[in-house]
Length: 585
Ligand code: PRX
Image (cartoon, rainbow, N blue to C red; front, top):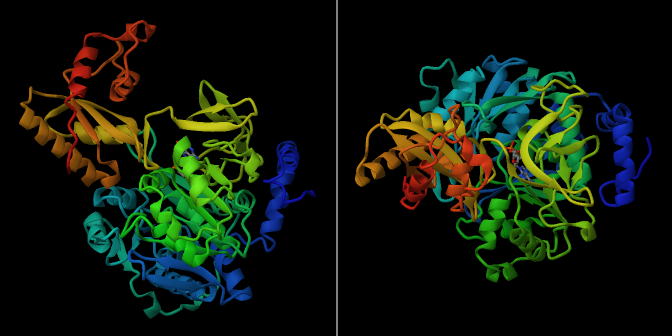
């Protein structure tokens, strides 16, 4: 199979030709790339991401870490990374962790966290990373349900000027569970066990890691990814879509707590032996110039971030930008939520300086890697369009929903049967323009996307409903200028409440959500209403709540309202919306 790899994601003619080949000769296409990328047929990610480079380029920088303050910086070479990985793997083995065991990782964005993921892979243990911003209750559930007997963490860390007491949170989370803690504050002190010197052989179909993500169900789903298919797909998409090369300096602002941090902070960049920058702070602390300072100092060539962060930084204005040098950049990327035109233009004009294409990449935890992305060619860029399917991916739109017509790309989670004839439902709303380019607009199901974080509304509702004062509730996403969406909760109460009582119940709801999920799920609005809009069959009409939540007018002419039991409830909800409470906790 011969084609120009360099041009496959740049030149539309080459792209079309390669895309057609990838569909018509699907099996050969993947096999060709598998053989090219895994010359040694070794599916241990630790081997692919560390040992290979440590042997060839031991002193090359693998990771550059920046902390909360401008001056905090560490550099880890591939040989140093190998030693860290071997040491953590040794400690896991000494504590009895074996191939196939689940290990939970709850850590900040430091080199040890990446080494911990790779150490699990090294011995064939299945890591289960939990975002360090989740509450102890959410962590406990994920440790318990994944049957992890080991939780990796550090004593504490600092993010955005705030201390995160990781160890304390983990201790609270695992209280009474059959799990122990391995602290990674002083990895240097560990010794290397000879069993960890070489990576454990792994098969293509062996499980590599799991990650919990929210869906329409009450409980988060545990998504499995396998060694071969996942690595093949994440590496390939990275290489083609970002045109990534060993000489690149790459900076992705996500967190290992999410799939982006798995595929495009840990596994794909290290697979190709890149220098990858990681950052454990926030874009706004101590100033809004953190990302730009890092780009200048490290001469970052590829910068991959999220729409919420870009919107937030754009809102600061352009004054400070002239202090920074962006000339090292050649490609930008964003992921996690829909972009909007003004943020896209700002990113393109000011950060990319009209030279760099923006890879608006659409994908999901379940898909393992990028599914839709624009071509590199600047003249073809359309703001907010994720545009083209990756090779082998066959997208379509059915009833407004983006669907993938075949379940046969290698990155698809092993939770789904890899069946050619079945359709993969994304739960996202999308449109396709006259050129056949795709634009993803948001969710069509009961999932809210707050700053790129997926949150199932039924998860929230079950927490709200557990409060004694609450009879029923419905949570929806409402538009938010920076976060994309914010959470709005409508609730009915078991008795009539005075205004002060409402304030106090709202505070209680908010703090309970924070306690059970984490700060990212904090509601922006809580609205007490006499009655939820329901159909005769008892289904909550969420679309009505969405219209009211967005302060839009209800269309009384549409037939949609005819299914309501009580049409009058609409007026009451509209009135209540004006007295929505914004909880401070
Ligand atoms: O709604 C889509 C949105 O994020 C969802 C997937 O979330 P998660 O599994 O946490 O993975 C996020 C990182 C891959 C999708 O169903 N989403 C992701 N990327 C985009 C997006 N929405 C619009 N445009 C995107 N580029």
